[in-house]
Amino acid sequence: MDLRATHADCKAAVSDLALAEARAPLAEALNALNAERSPWLTSKCDAWLIDGEDEALDPYELDAADLAATGSPLHGCASYLDLLARGAETFCDFKKQEALLCALAQALREVPLPHARIDLVLRGARMHQQEGFGMTAYVTGCGLDAAAALQAWQGALAAMTHALLNC
Image (cartoon, rainbow, N blue to C red; front, side, top):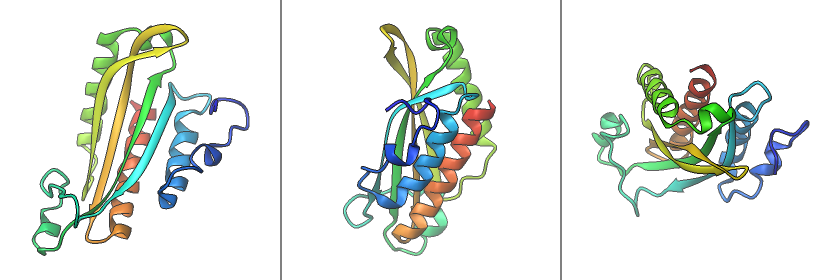
């Protein structure tokens, strides 16, 4: 589905996600990242819950030492978005993308992300028969229950989207 097309329906693009609570925030991020004036386009995304009983989350990686002190297991919400630079000169240039990734990381370090983290990975990609580079953004939030985890994740997703559009 081409999310850059006029009147693209980003809500429809995420309607098949199993995690219904993530659909609206992801649709909002997709709308912004695929907008005509955005330097990005997205190729795929997903979101899921992490049950604290089944899978351990590291509270120190998620700025959640305060939650860990309660002794309760942490619940999480996580997602990924695959992003491609819209301009061919950036898409094909590893050094430009590496510098952009460093600038994004620096911008995000300055944003408080309590109970959350964002990981950015530069990787090889192919677009329109052209080899280049893309980015995968992993966003994770945690809380003492699923609702709190979703809230932390939404804040981090919004921060990441803002940084991508302003860096």
